[in-house]
Length: 205
Image (cartoon, rainbow, N blue to C red):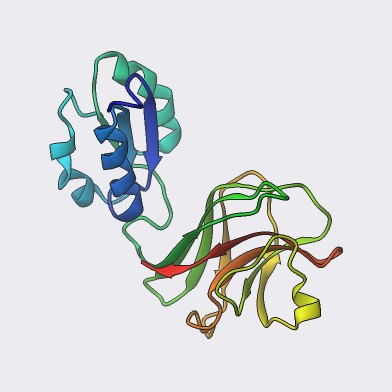
C-alpha cells in the first residue's frame, strides 16, 4: 500500500545505517526521497534506489532543501553531500528513540565514536517541553519513566551539560571513560523539579 504517495521525504545522514533503512522504507510506501550524507562512496553504492530519473548532488543540506521541490517536480530521487559532522567520519555505537508523554519529548539519541576516540551524543529531530534548568544526562538504568526523580532514587548519572534547545538537533561530548554498558539511557532532566522530561534507552547499533 502506497501510504506516502505524493509525499516528499528529506533524510540527512542517509547513506548508511538507520538513515538508509528509513529511506528505503519511505520509498517502498510511495514517498519521493532525497538523501544527503558526507560519504560520497556510500551514496554512490546505493544508486539502485534511484528509479525515477536524474540524480542531483549538492554539498550542503540547505542547498538540498532549496532544490528538493524542483528536483521532485521532474520525478528525481536526489542524492546529496552535506556537512553532517559525523557521517563517514565516526562510528555509530548506540542509538535509541526518546519517549515522554507528559512533557512531549521525541526524537533520536545516538552516540558516536570519532576517529580520535572522542565520544559524542547527537540528538536529532529532537523536541521537548520548555523548562528551567534542564540538563542532558546519561543514567545507569535501562530506561526511565516520565517524571522519574533520579535524586530520590540515587540513580548514578553522567552530566553532559545544559540542554542547548528544546526543538533542535544538538551535540554533547561524552566523557571518554564513560561505561556505556552501565549508562544505558539518555535523560532530559529538570534539575529544579527533579523530573525526567524524557528518556531514550540506548541499544548497540
